[in-house]
Amino acid sequence: MGLDQHLRETEEEARALTAVLPGPRGAQQEAVAVAARLHDLGKCHGVFQAKLRDGGGDPPEGLLAKSRAPWNNGVSARPHFRHELVSALLLLDGDHWHRPGLDPSLVTYLVATHHGQVRVSVRPEPGEEAGTLLGVREGDRTPSVAVSSGEHFPARRLSPAAPFRPDGRWPALVAALLADPALGPFRLAHLECLVRTADWRSSARHDGPV
Image (cartoon, rainbow, N blue to C red; front, side):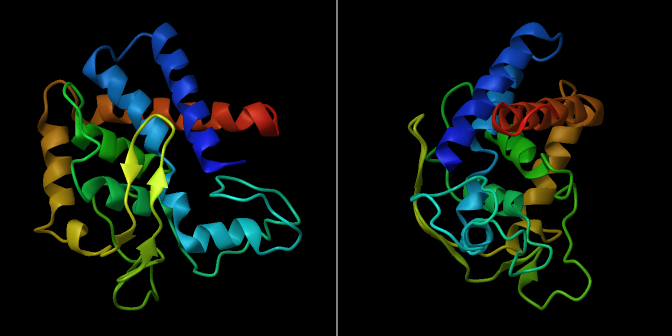
């Protein structure tokens, strides 16, 4: 499945969920939808694309979000690689995707946390080399990504550790969200669940019920 298709369908599912469930409205509802639209940007990374393509056969052209055997061999060249960390890095790197009425900090948090692996603090896995964080290496490059909803993310050189240091942007961003009386830990957890459920539901369109 193409990456843009998966992002588009996940946004559709998020908007459908928040339209019928009690809970977020206004800016928070929009943050859930935009987070769903951008949640898997990091799958553009070459390590993830290789996992989806290198099993053999003739995979489709363009960036993929998911694939099956024989294309997908189920093996990542880098243990612990987390595509959602790459997604967060792309969102943290610039404000070109921001727009009035949107909370970019909340969107970035929901994108980063939608698999539950990137949380308030982000640390290397045991045995990871210096300069590597959850499989993402200093100096890795991502291609440009254009989303059909209009956002464009230029090619980037990644520096995974810097935002997640104690004095980096991520701890301050998370602390502000936790301290926000309109959010806090329980509302954040609820919004995370909505993004994750939208992701599951969009995948189920092609893989069957989850």
